[in-house]
Image (cartoon, rainbow, N blue to C red; front, side, top):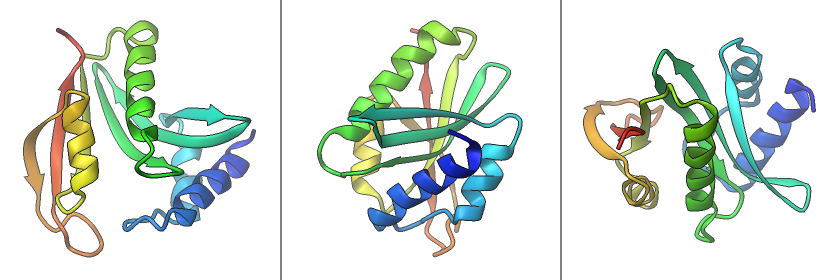
Length: 142
């Protein structure tokens, strides 16, 4: 699948779930066209159920965006566990995962805590609606 088609599929998945801080189609296209952009897809029956867009710089991985097709059905946890498992074998140089999550997104915060992230900071007025983002980190080493 080319990056334009993938961008449209990811945007459609998120749009259909009525995400609060929805990326535009252009944002997906721009990110997927970036030479450092990487993605991880969780598929079932040929369709994308969940995804992560990320970048790696030296030993640090930044999760830029994550979405699931059906919230509340365990896809987020499956996605993160599969991603972390694959990462530990395919990119063992990565020592830390970082992400931002809306302070208002309780379900996502709880999910990230469950899979080993912890809060390390806050970004005030980070999102377009001026809500704050919590900066979270997960160590891949021990």
